[in-house]
Amino acid sequence: MSVLILAEHDGIALNPAVNHAVTAAQHWGMPVHLLIAGNDTNVIAQAAAEISGVARVIRVDAAHLEHALAEDLANIVVALGRDYQVILGVHGAYARNVLPRAAALLDVAMVSDAVEILPGNTYVRPVYAGSVYSTVQNDEAIQIVTVRSSRFKAAGLGGSAEIVTFDAPPAFGKSRWIGRTHQHSDRPALGSARIVVSGGRSLGSAEKFDAVLTPLADKLDAALGATRAAVDAGYAPNDIQVGQTGVVVAPDLYIAVGVSGAVQHTYGMKDSKIVVAINQDPDAPIFQVADYGLVADLFDAVPKLTAAIH
Amino acid sequence: MKILVAVKRVVDHNIQVRIKPDGSDVDIAGVKMSINPFDENAVEEALRLKERGIATEIVAVSFGTAANQDVLRHALAMGADRALLVETESELQPLGVAKLLKAVVERVQPDIVLLGKQAIDDDAGQTGQMLAALLGVGQGTFISSLDIEGDEAIVTREIDGGTEQVAVKLPAVLTADLRLNDPRFVKLPNLMMAKKKPIETLSAAELGADIAPRLKQVKVSEPPARKPGIRVNDVQELIAKLHEEGMLS
Ligand SMILES: Cc1cc2nc3c(=O)[nH]c(=O)nc-3n(C[C@H](O)[C@H](O)[C@H](O)COP(=O)(O)OP(=O)(O)OC[C@H]3O[C@@H](n4cnc5c(N)ncnc54)[C@H](O)[C@@H]3O)c2cc1C
Ligand SMILES: Nc1ncnc2c1ncn2[C@@H]1O[C@H](COP(=O)(O)O)[C@@H](O)[C@H]1O
Image (cartoon, rainbow over all chains, first blue to last red; front, top):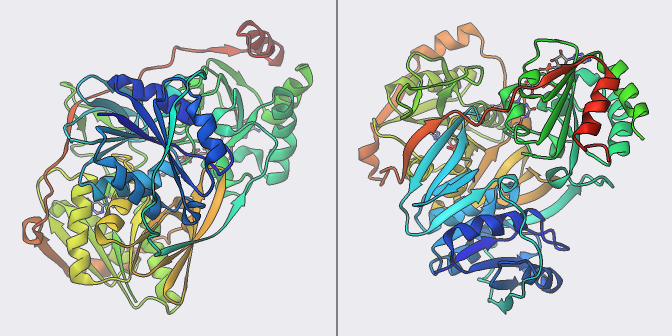
């Protein structure tokens, strides 16, 4: 038996988080296969084959797979899945869309957002916005799991997996891709950035969010993040929301600026190595998860910080 | 057009849950319970489709004990036309709920099933996708906008790195993200009126679905605590600390 990883990509490159899932997959001590479905996956498959610890890359190419519709991807996972003991994905929008569907078709339960994999098909996962960890045992014949990638090291290069192809099942045909709004940015991707600068509602407007935080992020080569309150207010785009219902990040340095620190927010950043909080309220909960707390007016402190970094 | 909305009863999002002394589970006895926030967005969106003359009937359904009547009353007070309580004392997990929902869909015959994208207690985010699979229909997950054009639901999905637009043939299963809408405030007179509306109740057993839990919770625990931090007095001190940590090189 082997482990199958539903490997996310954007048509150009593999999501770097897949390398972390490869490490998670080593837990079972079985061969690891990567499933890469898309329209023209040749280049992506070549790169995937070089990930250390991958035994086989399974390419599934078809025109109807170009936009990774959940219905079509789930059908591929189901077609291949019965030969696997474990099916893994990275806990992000891609696998969260596909794997529950595949699980139901295979009639097995699924474990979402595993932060630890223990012996005996047992997993630790956050519940209640991460304020509690639940340890669950899964006795299903096929283990379907999404993993929190930041909890597992990235597998390196140096592998030479075989690349095989698999014929795609016919298009499901009940959903149709229309388009995509890509928030273009020259910054590092939020999910894998070494430093994240995150802002809250207190920035006051989209202009100020940009004027105060962007120069700091530029100097640090950081990704920008935001609270839900800041996103809802229109200060920042939805895809940079950090938290229970947004993105989970674990950078080396997370700088929270004018962020109160609600559990729904800290869910998404508590695993960061170093947390800095700048908030004018000395009792703000964010200070409870901060390594370095500065009680200050952000409009005063952040420009000073930016100016002092070379 | 008929819309079925699944509403779950969960610990209110403002409550910090406690762990039982024996670590077997969380202790939610006597804790404030509410409708799952995402499900409130789902109800709101159904109401808006009705107000736009697209939907004709909105049915709210909840699975659990008799206590779930309160979230169904909430949905009725918001404006749902009728409510269905599927009663069971057993622990429910996403696959089981999806199977129950499938049986309800077969009875109610909705054109759209709206769910929340995730329940804020188990944080699973699975039920909608599982239901779509079991029904053999298309799915629109994590949606932040919804339109109906002909026999398709046109949705905007919140995905990593942006948003995506997808058209899904009806009947379809859709799951609501928080940015889909701002749920209306429930007025007291509406809540009083909703108290008088009947809630149809059936037992889960009647639906004949296999709802046996598949995952076994071994224990619950506190997440690892971060080591206590320190306060710095000014920006200079902060910079010095970040240098010491090797963060600014
Ligand atoms: C179901 C659900 C899911 C949610 N999911 C998420 C999620 O994924 N991510 C998320 O972030 N939130 C989420 N939330 C919302 C969360 O509960 C909080 O409401 C939100 O994180 C608060 O954002 P904020 O810190 O920007 O705003 P506020 O809580 O309003 O805090 C603003 C902070 O700024 C400080 N401040 C004000 N002015 C200044 C100044 N001049 N200088 C310095 N500091 C200043 C204040 O002291 C305060 O601490 C969710 C909520 C629910 C119910
Ligand atoms: N017991 C339940 N009763 C009604 N709806 C539910 C129940 N459990 C889950 N749901 C629906 O499924 C969604 C996702 O739940 P989950 O997969 O548990 O995160 C919720 O937002 C609800 O719409």
